Image: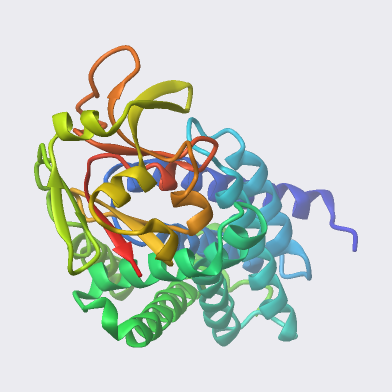
Length: 200
Length: 146
């Protein structure tokens, strides 16, 4: 698939915006120890990427935006960034695959795309932990249960309920992100072009 | 637009509400437990158990091997499924047997060239060549998971 120069520039702009969100907000949120930082960053990053999708409504554009953001993440100061970089790329890929199911952008496709991307954030520690960081399944599972236990104030005996609640939380936050991306995308398009997005 | 801003505000408030409580001051005692056995250690008691060195991010730390600490507390580390380190701010991380039985997995109580920094707290975990998440600082408790 070939993109025009204008489309490439537009995708680069939205990729850069996502990258800046990751570098700046990522550091701040980690520093102030807000829980579910990854989820918040995923929702905001994909929100930016999907607004970009309204400007370049073609297959591959969301993934391309994610690639730009991933490259920019290399410039993060300090911590290990291989996990977040894989995260950005995988979230963009998941969102792209969901969006590609639909013939053109719609509110439903946006909601499903960010919800699926957010769900990846939940699944990623299991994948990267096992394949990259050499951890085993049990400690990753226990970490997840502990995280949910602290968040919901439930005892770790209710492990399955905690994990179920986390999955629902990730999906809901992602869905809200998708809804916001659709609304904000239209607002931005109206502001810039004085008309609804060409994609719709 | 107003509705969108309202949703953003609500999401921000929900996230803020989820922020962890203020970190409890890192105590000078480390609790080691498996649910039935509970034992607490001071820095001096830990020093008496040994002084092994290991590094994290280029800083050399002195501490006691985690498996030695567990054995001293009366817990057989070879029978455990996992070991959890709990930090004073509630952060937890779980280690699998290859990690908590390793010779260079330490509960550190000092740096090689001086005392621990305030950021490290009285005790911290040191697992060389592992991610920052697996090297928690301000550790107050070690939970053995049979």
